[in-house]
Structure formats: C-alpha cells, structure tokens
Image (cartoon, rainbow, N blue to C red; front, side):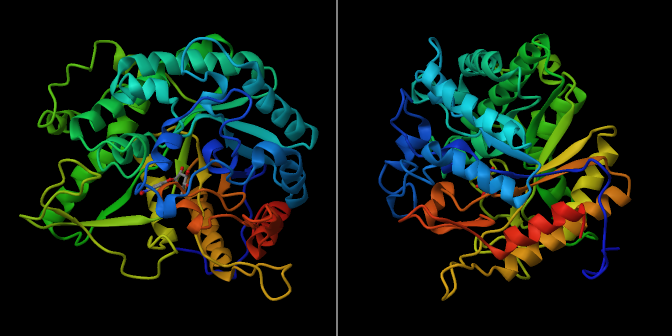
Length: 459
Ligand code: PNW
C-alpha cells in the first residue's frame, strides 16, 4: 500500500541525500584547458541531431562557476553530490598522456565539496567518450574497454585519496541502445549488432575498471543502471507476459545477470544470436564483469507497459522487439511525455531485491522535467508539479525500504536545469532554475521542498 501523501515518513539513519549532474550537461568550456572533443561535441554540432542545434559548449558554465555552485549546494543542505568526470578533459585522445589541467578542475571541485561537508560521488563515464576512441570503433571495440580502465586509474590516482565512492558507468543501456541502435544519442549509429557489442564492451570496461580500482584499494564501488520498470499491459495475457519478459531480458537482465550473477542469461544470448555471432564474447569476460560491487545505482523516471501485437514493427531502441507494442502513457506525464507512476519504482526495487538478494542500492537519479520559470517577482520559481513528483517518488522509496529493500540513498536529477541531450536546453529537470542568458541560478520551490526533506530525513 502506498502511503497517503499526508502521512509523515522517516528514512533510516544515515540515508544519504544528494543531487546529481553530468559533465557534458553542465560544464561548458568545451575547448578549454586542453579538453579534447567528445562524441557529444561531434553529435551536437551535426545539424538535425539535437533540438534547435543546441550544444554543450557553454551549458551552465559550471566549469567557471563551480565554487558558487558548491556554495549553493551547501545552502540547500545537500549531503552528497554525484557528478561525472569528462574523460576528454583527462585524456584528450582517450588514451595516452594525461592532461593535468583537466584533473586540476576536479581536484578543486572535490576539495571545495569536502570543505563544505558534501560527499563527492564520482561517475567515471556519463556518455562523453573521447572522439578519437569513437573513430576507432567506440564501444563496439574491445580497445575502448581497456582504455576505460586506464582512464579510471588516472582519475583515481589524483582523486583516490579524497573520493570514497566510485561509479564506473552511468546507464550503459542508453550508451548502447540510444547511441548505437536508435541513434538518437551520440554517436548516432543505427545498427543492432553494434548495440549488442556496445553493451558487452561497456560491461567489460566496467569489469576491467572494477578490477583495477579494487587493486588500488577502492572499497565503495558500483555502477548505475536505468532498468525498465516494465509490466505486461494485461497480466492475464500469456502473450503480454512473454513480451514483458523479453523486454526485461533485453533491457534489464542483460545487465543485472552478468554484473550480479556473473553470466548473461541464456534466453537473452539466444535472442542476440539473431543479430550477431557473439564472437566478441570471450572466455573470462563474464567473470570480470561479475566481480562484486558494493552498491547498485538505480535511475528511475517512468514505467513502461508492453503488449504483444503480432506484425507490429520493432522499436528501433530495442532491437528484436518486433511484435511488441510499447503503450503510450495512460495517465499524467511530465514535460518529457514520460508517465508518472511512483508505485512502479517500489515494484522495481522490490523485484531487484527479490531476484538479486543482498544488493545494496541507491537511487542515483530520479526527477521530472517541467517548463516553469520565474514568477512576476523574478525571484521565485513555482514548480508544484515537480514537488508532487518528488513527494510521490520519495514515498515510493520509503515503501520499498519498509518492505525490506536495502536502499541507502537518493539523488535528485538534477541539481540545476541543464543540457538535456537530444532535447537541448528546452527540457528543465533542475530543482534550481538556470537563466541561460545570465547564468543566474534560482532555487525552485522544489529545491526548498527537498532541503526540508533532507533536514527532516523524511517527509
Ligand atoms: C538519464 N530514455 O537519461 C541520464 O542519466 C541523464 O543524463 C538525463 O538527463 C536524465 O536521465 C533525464 O533524461 C536518459 O529515452 C535519457 O529512456 C533517455 C532515456 C532514459 C534516460
């Protein structure tokens, strides 16, 4: 049963409250201090790929405003900040010499955060692959997995004395399927076999980096996934249930099983054989991928419902789903058109807890896009819908904890409005408003709401 929204709930002691961002989405300074080009620079500068031709060249100018941004986080009472490192700042060509000026930026950021009592939570890869590596095959190539581990160690060498919590990848599903199957994200390739190769080499990169980071003494390590909260449209229809099982395999178990059980599921491998001979899957890979992790990051926004519909074309994002229809949202949606259903988050967390017992989890992203800007005073940004979204999903997290799920923290997406990938700046996910003309930040009502949640460790 979901808590009625008036009942007060308290989270376990030590529950970690934070907010999240990603390098390309906020930093800007795309050509500064020796940063090399990434696949997102190339993609966003290619006409027709991103809404209105928006790029991350300036974004929130966080590269120059980091000190003020950290001060703002402290004022909001954040306990932790999840951010990502731009690989092309560290190794402009993806491999080889390290660019000290790139490391200096994150060094300063980490010190500032710690000075304000905010725990830095580092994501090593949030989609900005150095272009040079893409030119050599990107994630379809095993070389990229190896390069990733080398890069991870270069970052750890500089920050490892002050950063405790490390996340290898953010949402490899997006990197693989949006990047190489539907092509709506960088590098914009549309080839099912490439997408499955990318899944594997992303996971292998996670495994190689995990081994190296462990050897270097990292004790809090994980990966962030965006599992589909997928259900059959009609739970009494065998065909719908089978459709949901297949989608769950292609989007969820293809990641969960190798990471948490050390092997790909047989039914998923059989499915992929329709597109590829699997020659890229080598002995020992799954063991590497299946090394223990300490925390599984979960990004959740929206549920999906599927139905068997023989004859319907496949969804380009999900190769092999011919004959399966993804239902349009039935109820209220956010500005992304994504359905709102907090109870689906509770179900998803319970399912992971049941099928992969003993997995500590954190919500590393959850939030909603709504277009509101400042009211007539220019000082206040009312966003009651976002407050309601967060309230509902925080209660859903609490429900999961009450049912035994080991959930240890929550990071709202996002700290501030930012570059929403193929949607450019037109979708606003921040709890803080950003005026892109002046770069002024204004905390929205949802930021005040979230501050209160943190202060009370509950709502
Ligand atoms: C995640 N989809 O992206 C990312 O981790 C963030 O960088 C992003 O800003 C946030 O969610 C909001 O979109 C996703 O199409 C992008 O299913 C697209 C999808 C899912 C997640």
